[in-house]
Amino acid sequence: MEVRDNEFLVVLGPGHCGKTVLMNIIAGLAKPRSGKVYLDGEELHGSDERIGMVFQSLNLMPWRTVMANVEFGLELSGMKKAERREIAQKYIDLVGLTGFENSYPHQLSGGMKQRVGIARAYTNSPQIMLMDEPFGQLDAQTRYSMQEEVLRIWQSEKRTIIFVTNNIEEAVYLADRIVLLSNCPAHVKQVYDLSCLPRPRNFTDPEFLRIRQDISDNTDLAL
Image (cartoon, rainbow, N blue to C red; front, side, top):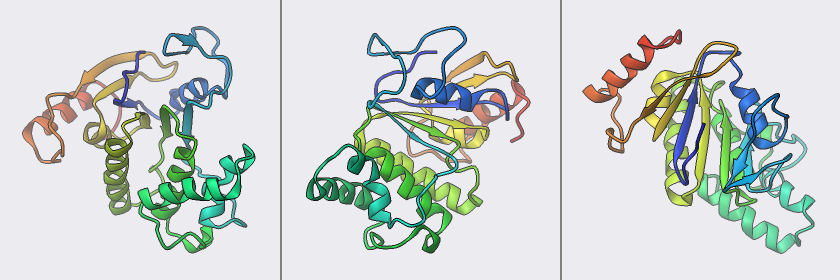
């Protein structure tokens, strides 16, 4: 599987086929049984600061404020407080949480918590952002809002995103390309190039619907 610079690549596949394992391997959190991971021609061994990750379960620290959660990685790196606050504030503003810096996770909605997780992941300026089904637990309206938010951030930051989902419509809406995985044990079943679909995309566009149906016909996933 090849990922292009600055592209929005969606990995689409059924539940328990190995999508999360794939993300963990790319992130250096798990070792592959075979194969290797390369970034800019360099083989990766373990975690790499050029790769960030947003999990479905955000693991926000409930005793820390939004600001403290977002700046946590920078704090661990030993960065001075004033510098890390400036960086954290930039990404808090970017995800639309200005004014909530002193709020705690229990005071936030599901979508707002996801924004905190995204801001935290971007503070280390990763070259590649991995997103492992980040919207799977959100209601439909919030999910759509977060899809728009992620696209806006991707277009603003101009960094590669590898996004995992089991939702066909979400994949077609977000992706430059879709890598369709088979059932477990997963292999790449097909790659869809969506350059024919202009942005912003419309869920009712005939070409959108055609691609969605084509993917549906090629997989066990439900629409």
